[in-house]
Image (cartoon, rainbow, N blue to C red; front, side):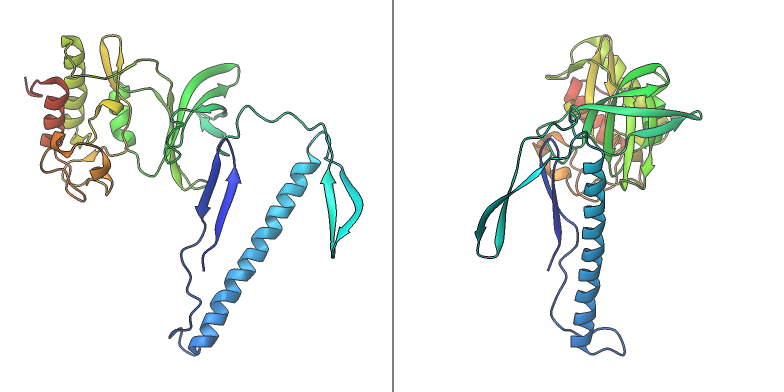
Length: 294
């Protein structure tokens, strides 16, 4: 048995809420028979479900009470068996927001509360990459930002490059227990995507400086690919520090193999392998046809 949940936001989202739970009796805890243990396991699951369903009903009851007008329910005189048919008539409800956004909407900077107003998903084709465009409101100051939710992030590497304007300015970057993920809030930077090999000497020098700065501090970027680069005038900015980590300690994730043509990666890049500076140097050569050490 498993329990799943589904919601409608700007898209349909369905997710497993539990692992597969066996309903078969098997040798369980000391002092309980296999059948007794299976019954106890299922009883705990159904009790938890009853509590959760009650909390959901309470949530939606309060949600309806907060609306301008609650939809009226009209009862028809027709019955089918024991079921009474009900129809919901038209009603004027409060206007919905421009998008149904993540519930993480506030954080603090220097003792001031910053509120996020989400506008749209930046990577609309990939539901597994929750990255949003938003306004960060701090008093009367409004800053356009990117809000990214991720399971892993290297704040040290991002800050190192943000200090020299080779990564977007960070406003917030920490693991939030309310979403069990890292929440990264950074400046929204308009720039050009890298489509081909970099040929502009200024762009090559900028990328070399960024990678070298990380290496000088013992860090490897790890994921030096075109989607993670942004050309802003004479600079190249790095915009994704999910993989970035300390050389010899950080390792490649299990999805490294899904990132396209493996011949463009260093031969040492594989699942679970240590990330090394020479791997960045190889990717720099692929992107620029130049040596990192020049």
